[in-house]
Length: 205
Figure 1: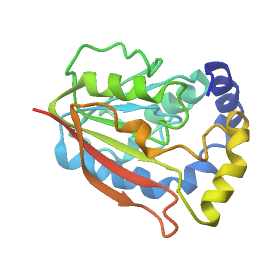
Figure 2 (figure 1 turned 135 degrees about the vertical axis):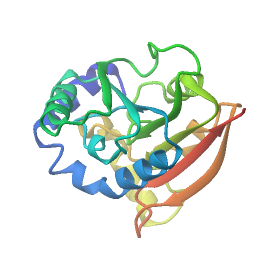
Figure 3 (figure 1 turned 30 degrees about the vertical axis):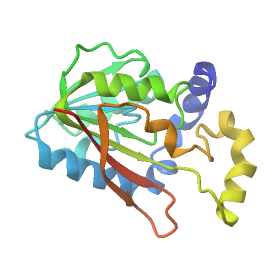
Figure 4 (figure 1 turned 90 degrees about the vertical axis):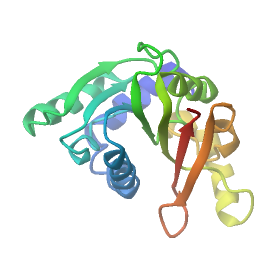
């Protein structure tokens, strides 16, 4: 997706995101934060959105969130303040293709329902790997395209509407597999139909 399409799409979704797409993605959000909580340390959430996952991180963590959309971040900041989320250290506007953090800054990098939205997913994966500490983990929750069946057919039909919907319905998993330092150590479907998949990747020590 083009940056301007992302901006307009998420400005449109921001007021109703929590009660629409936010409910659909709840299972993935809870699973990813549980895994992050088990590791501890400093977490970066790329594409923090309206901050729906922020309350689920353990208070012992230090959480930094970034998002391309200021409309989403405004709601995330409000949520963090209203709920007194002291573990949330920083919420910043940032392009995921060019993360403004030093190398090896985070123990865990989380990206939920983001990688099929960004204009250059390969570059985003490379940036997330760069800022992750050696031996650290990258947690992805996303919808990946099926290769066959009626759901694969439906995904292809919706593909031309990606800019309007704000996500790609036929995003191939191999687009997140190109960073040599990362190895998949867990892959788990999150719903009965396999609508979303959880991937845990570990960066070489």
